[in-house]
Image 1 (cartoon, rainbow, N blue to C red):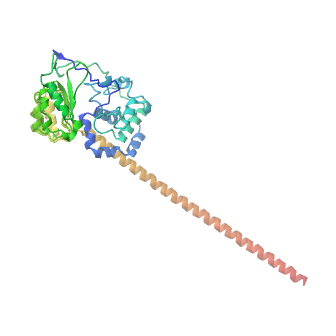
Image 2: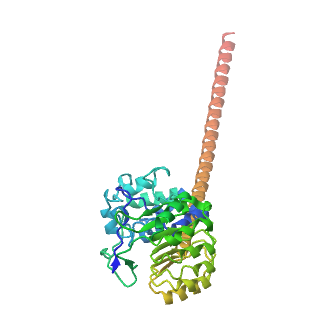
Image 3: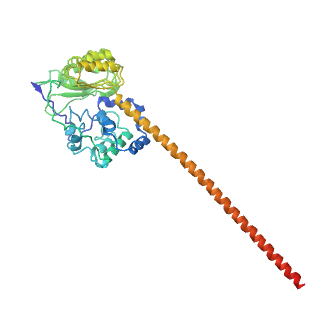
Length: 400
């Protein structure tokens, strides 16, 4: 009998949207962020009319929020992959207040200092200023979320993870958890009163190597492992072979290659796999075909090709593959808007200079006319004085 995985509830507050694997693109795509950083781009976009939610807001939410507030997880009872659910909100109410970004809880949290307990996203880099401005502008415009099918309660399917209802941790698991704790890694329960755990190695970064991983062999209760941005190699992944209950695996920003994927192809419950910025090629995707329940795969900045992805989708037609193409398109659009804004500013500046030049010429012409007028007045005075003097001289002559 399969066990139902409860929503993860770690704090009684609106949870911090965890940055998903694909969201780690922020850390390695400074060029894209640079494009967004320009206020001119946002001004140009706003000037063109309503912000396009599907093309400009949803990608931000998808890359930064869906991992913890999507179909599979709803931390704090908050779901952000649906307009109806997002506007309804979670434990503390709606994340977005249409027309008023300052009263929107999501805006408050993404603008907090990074070390604040309520800051989100809780992992990875903060949203860029331009991304935050874009969200604020979208909220000001009414937080319009295009019509979509009503979010239904999740129903089990053949592709859902199947976890044993009577699962009990192994005899050595407690020692394994303690061993990881010595390395600074906490293997914590995903919710109260359930045996399932998650282990986030990413917080220790490059301090994590293959030598840290052996305790995982005795931790069958793990349903999520995050090895992102660590120094693990293909050999280290051999320690994950027995984690048959594993549902989510982060390998982004590591040196993992095709050889490493051979160690995880037996993880039949895996639904999420992040390979962003690894050395995986199309050959590695052959190993991925052995993951029957896989739903989300992230391949941006890998060595895979469109042909390889197409071949994978023939074997796993239900898998959603993110290659980063949508981000590149968005970056291109913002760059075009930035260039257009620059041209518009240059044109406006040229027009201003021309107007100033014309104004200066008119001023000089007016001054010249005034000077000529004054000159004529002086000439007239001189003539008048000359005439007066002549008249006086004439009178003197008459008196003589």
